[in-house]
Image: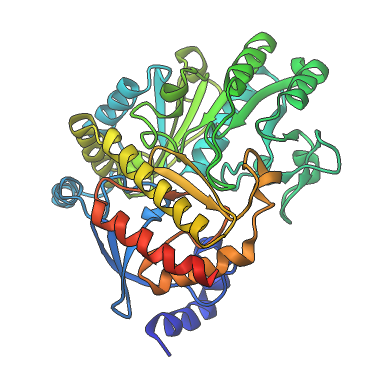
Length: 425
C-alpha cells in the first residue's frame, strides 16, 4: 500500500469522505487521491516521492507557482509580528488600494475569508440595496456553497430553482432562477417577465466550474444592458478569473463594468482570502457604514493580506500575461494535434492561462454541451497522464491553470505525455 493510500484510509475515519473539499476525493476519476508533500515552482511531489508537473495550482491562486520567494518572504515577516489581531492593519488598506487600482469598477472593497463568503455577501448586499429578493444564476456556474447558490434548474429552460443539496430550504431556492449560460433568449424572457423583481444576476464571466467556457460575443454586453435597464445589480464572480486572465480580470478583458465583483484565490497568494467590492453607493450599505450586516474575525488577517500584496505587486511589476498566453497557446496546439493524431474527439477551451480539454466533438458553450464529453475517456486520460507525471484537475468539469513558473520544457513534457495518454484513452 502506498503512503497516499494509507493516509486516505486514515482520513476517511476522521474526515467526511476523507477530504476537506469533495473534488479532491478523486471520485470522478477513480482510485485514491494523491497526498501532496511539497511544491516548488510548477512542480509538486506526493508523499510517495513522485514528481508531477502541476496544472491545478491550488485551483488557480498560484499564478507564480509554488513558494514564490516574494510570498515566502512576506509571510516570514508577518510571522515575526503576529498572525491575527482582530483589528485593522496597514496592509489591509494597501491591499484594498491595490485591488482598486487594478479594478476601476471596484471603488470600495470588503475583505473576507473565502470565495463563498464573497459571493454570498455580494448577493445579500444586492438584495439589501435593491429591496428585491429574486436572483438569477446560470446552469453549470458555481459560486460557492451558499444556500441561494446550491440550486439547479427544473425541467424547463428557465424555471424556479430547486434545492441541489439536502439542507437547502426549497423556499429559499425558489428565489433563484437558473438559466442556460451563453443563451440570450431565455435571459431576455426572464427579464421581460420578472425584471422588476430581480435583485441581481451573478455570473462567472468566464466559467471555470463546468470546465473553462468563455462568453460568446455580445453575451456579457447583453447582461450589462438588461440589468442596468431593470435596476438589477450585475455581479461578476471573478474569484477564478480575477488577475488570472488579465490584470483587471474578465471585466478588463471584455470591457464590461459590473456593479459588484467577488474575488478570491490570487488576491490571497495561496492563503485563504476573498473580497467583494463595487460602486461606492452600493458598498456604503455594508455595516458599519450601512444596514447590510457582514463581519468576520479573520477577515483581512495579516498572513493572507501579506501574501496577496506580494503577489499583486509582482503582477504589477512583472506583467506575465503575454508569456502565460503564449504558453497556453503552445499547450493548446500541442494537445489538439496529439488528440487528432490518436483520432480522439477533443475540444480545448482556453482563455489565457485557464483551460479545459473536453473529450467531445462538439464546441462547448454551456453546461449541456460540456456534458456531451466522454467522461470515461477523460478518466482514462487523467490516469495515464498521472502515470506520466502530469497532474491535471481530477474532473472533466474543472478548469486547469498554467503558472508563470511553467517552462517550455514543462509544456513539451506535457504534450509528450498526452501523446502517449491519448493512445490509452
